[in-house]
Image 1 (tube, helix red, strand yellow):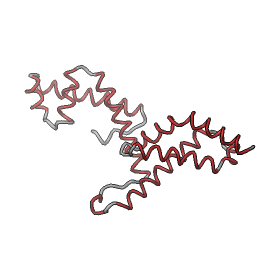
Image 2 (tube, helix red, strand yellow; image 1 turned 90 degrees about the horizontal axis):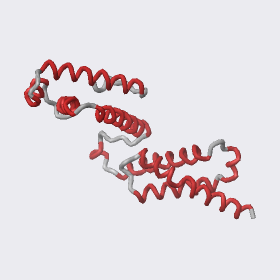
Image 3 (cartoon, rainbow, N blue to C red; image 1 turned 90 degrees about the vertical axis):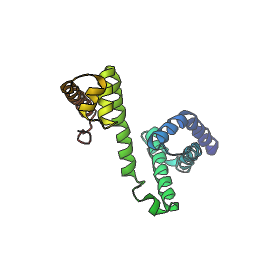
Amino acid sequence: MENIDNEAYINELVIKYNSYLYKVIRNSANTISEEDIEEIIEDTFIILWKNINKVDEIKSIKSYLSVIAKNLLKNRYRNMQITYDLSDYENFIADSLQLDRLIEQKEKDALIQKELDKLCVEDKRIFMEYYYSSKKTKEIAKLLNISESKVKVKLHRIRKQLKKILKEGGYGYNEWW
């Protein structure tokens, strides 16, 4: 009878946390296939099933499932790395530190993009031309038919605002400026 209760409990958890685990995995790795995500989710619940007797000791089942899924994802990346020819991927290191850096960079990019979306069209264009198109202030001034000093002042103000936002978000800003 206990097995039937455990099965019902696991089924409840699958229904409740399946989409949550999908988001955790998708947000942790954007180069993973849908099939791999589904497999990791299934494996997460299998591990939970095998450790069902420890569930009473677990304070947060949501955190427990998240940790299992992230560990399975890390293992998947480690296993994938073995099958590659390392000479083709010298600069690619698929470990948890690299994954953490990628996630942090995505969060920083999202903060910057959100702030850039608040700028007026001219300010955003100045920023994009300077940082993403690598144009000099003189070129931007000519392109927008404004003075070079105005371009410099606007860049200074935008950088100052972005630094403030990144600092408030708990991130450094030395990489940009």
